[in-house]
Length: 268
Image 1: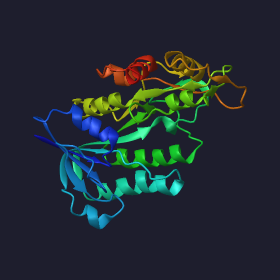
Image 2: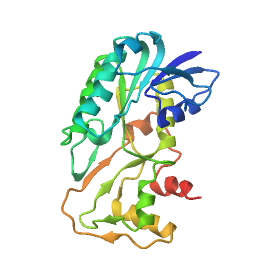
Image 3: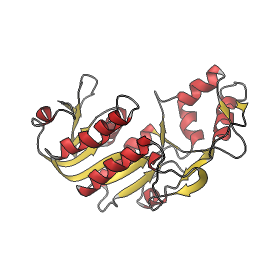
Image 4: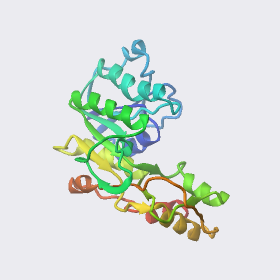
């Protein structure tokens, strides 16, 4: 059996573990509190920011997936989670395959342009800048990176709550482009990349249909029999559109290729 360590094992890590065949993979989940980890994930109680605690983690793995998340939205918390924690772990473990979970926030484009793995990364916010530092650490160690767009799914229903509360709004012109991916597809993508014979070092992971915010909100309101979201003329950019050609060319197929199918499943 292959041995996988999921460092920072949260919701996406659990979805990944559920995708992997128990006859092929033995999965361990590392986090500070392990009470919520379901079977058959083997719990590893440790703090990625405590080198002494990590000394007890086994050294050799077939694969390591690093998906730690910050406890708060500050530069210090982001650097601890994405850079220092990863460095601490890599000083103590070795893996035949390392996979870092990153984000499309590393792109700074804000004019509606299409972006992919070859596009320039010049993020304007600290979150994207620190994620780029984390990616550099992973790639220097021979790892690969997957950049997820906006994750939604059970427990990640912000837009639905905005519609229900009547607080949803959008700017119709120029459009505000949005990108998303269902949490189930996130777990499936990680499982796919772990099994892929010859993966590339970088993948953009977003569904097949970037969509204007107004289009998404109008569709949700219609399905929920709620009032049409408010139109605004707020100042701001138009966002970007994430291309997933490389991921699809690797053989991956989405369970929820667009927001209608993903949100539709959540509302049934």
